[in-house]
Length: 110
Image 1: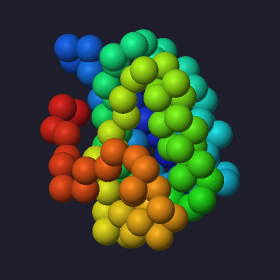
Image 2: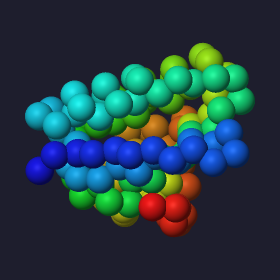
Image 3: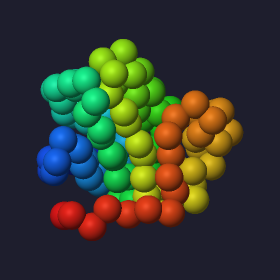
Image 4: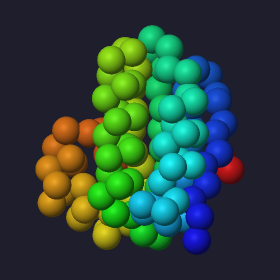
């Protein structure tokens, strides 16, 4: 299964909706899409992962790289809608302490 992402911008806030499996084989497309996002100062990006049914360490690396780039450019990134499995993955790697993650929110702008 592939991974897809689509974006919707509302009031200087960018909402990204990620769907599918993120692993070594599918990650390059997601990486390219996130690298193409133009982060301007003050831009808030909210990535909804509620439809991600599998993610390995490759996916973690992609989100960490995007998060770090946003911080460098004075933007903000929040991950929302994580399943308990994804939430656990971020917790055991310590990333839940470093990144802005909201587990009980789903964005309904699709």
